[in-house]
Length: 389
Image 1: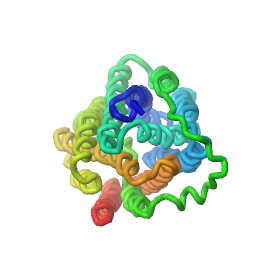
Image 2: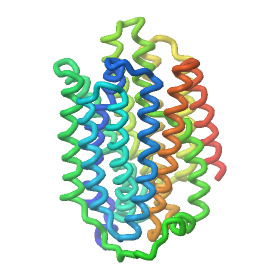
Image 3: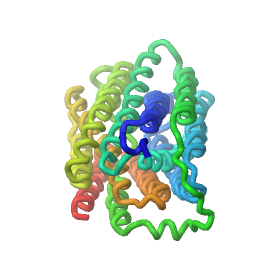
Image 4: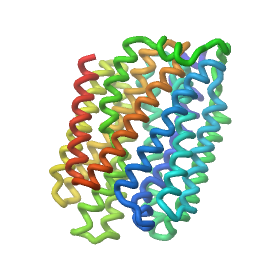
């Protein structure tokens, strides 16, 4: 097919634009969520619970949607529906009066994200030749992260003029445009349906090398907490120096830098992995996560020091997101690709649930340093497993 001869084709562009728009809305909401939860009396443990339960709820949807797309031979409609659900859910935060209301909206939104994620990744892998997996996934993550830069930047501007609830409503615009990008730009590759496919057989039919890869991903994921907690920690560290209002603005600006480094690193990392070993680079990214967490344990109350840690965070997320997807594409045969991406997303979702819940709990009941220490140990262990497999 001509689509597969050129890695930068209409499908890759359409999925990239969808991720840019969706993540702009998502990160706009994420940037202001910690301070919004504070205004309604929620704690760090509540934030960790919200992020963790949302990730856990989406895990089962991810596994089902990937397998179901393999079974019916179609992926695009599932992706469009997922983007619509995710886009609408964030706007509902504007109606919240309790943190449990935010929890419900986040869970529904993450179920939509779970619905779209595996099928979109499978479509992306189907659209390019194997020798360009790194570039395609790297470009996609770069576009995704361009949205992650735009979202907090807009939040940083809007917060001076608009209420937090109004900003949540505005996120509806990029959310719905992301669904339109998939609907009008992406062409679903025809695959004959196979209604005899059995769920558990598809799971067990994935290659052994892929299952071993998932073990390393899972260990790392149990320490890979939601980075909304970095915004909260930066605010806490900077408040004694600058006061709460300026500390919140500086924390958001640090998160913008974090996402800029994420965006700038994703494509070069992916392109480099097309020439070098993907797993070695992925292990290095996991190791950087451990270094960042150790840095937060030792963090003195200074903006420059925090800036370095947020830069490390942006780089390791770029490595993780670009290379987990492209490594999976390399290991998965086409007939179980949707199922495999569902398994990868589910493993990541369960890991995110454990990490956000545990780090938030340790943070609130013991100290932030203990939460970061837990994350550092799992990150380094995950790096060792990936390197040795």
